[in-house]
Image 1 (cartoon, helix red, strand yellow):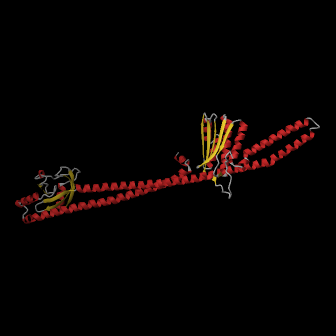
Image 2 (tube, one colour; image 1 turned 135 degrees about the horizontal axis):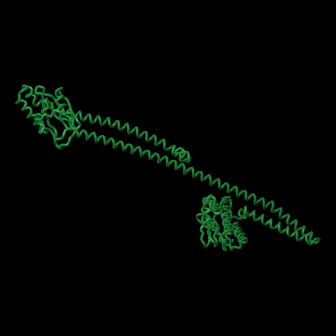
Image 3 (tube, rainbow, N blue to C red; image 1 turned 120 degrees about the vertical axis):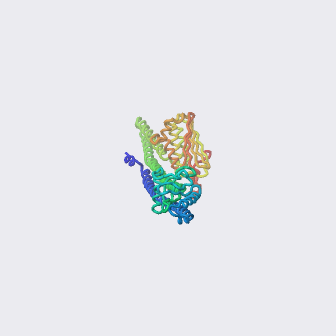
Length: 480
């Protein structure tokens, strides 16, 4: 199902996926590698820091024990193994050696009896052999074992005298072998643990920030890719629209050229031939009128039919390409179109023009004429109007053609059809003609009538001397 959906994507969607998916995968892989390497490096640095701090603590403990031993070594060194007074004197000295908030010295006999514990006096004279911490680590037995072997360090959990809460402790113990004593001191390393935890938290924070930075960079890259695609898409679409407009304009130009050619052929060929036949038949009628009374009637009917054919051909010629549009301009062409509409329908026309300062180009004249032609055709077929007003004028923004009637208005279904791609073509053709020339087209309709307005920009207004001579105005004042 996923493969089917992927195949059903459009070309633009596939192209976007092709540009973004590899980028996302690459950034994700880079993020994982960077995070893993950063974490490994940070762990090594934290371990080094922890080891350095602990080594500093151990060195500090050893210095404490060495200083304490030097302080009473003159007593221990000269006393026999059973000298109770010397032992008592040394125990008093060790009991008084308290430093900091937690520091003190302790003494255990090899049998596990506590002899000195100034901060934990409840331990004195008790045998604590077999004592272990909450984690199960032996304490007293291990301290005595280390002392028997000479000296060393031991780590375990022990209650802090200041708070009573258990904490990690490191002790350094040495031996007085002649007295069978294990003498030592310890420090709590909860500050080291806190420092390591803080460093680890900082590493986690840096890792999260790194991921956020990478995510932001990735998002920015995706937005750039998407924005670039949108810009290219809009640019290509505009180019395509421009090409489509140019192609449509060429189609309209080809249509107008073909209509002009057909109009010229009808006027110069068939129309002239039919006129000649009419005159020939007229002569024949005159010649035969004295001999046969029925011949003139037959010839009269033929002449009338030929006259009707000539008129029809001329009408078709005017519809295809009105000669007055090329010869006299848009104003006279629209006036002629309006008068013929009035003769054909009996609807009262009102035609008005305003003199243009500059004339219209050929495309603009054809477009406005076709709009007027289509609009009058729609009024004749659908409006049921009694008055039609046609106005063409110019202003600072360009040329404006307005056609209004007092009919029944445009049927909403016809409006919807004109907006549909497959609907009625009349209004859509008028709108497309204006859009091809960058103009505007609007329809306002109600029960009181309909108004159609077609507007063309100034770009379709030509200067009077565009052809090297003063050209006549396209739209002439009807009073002239």
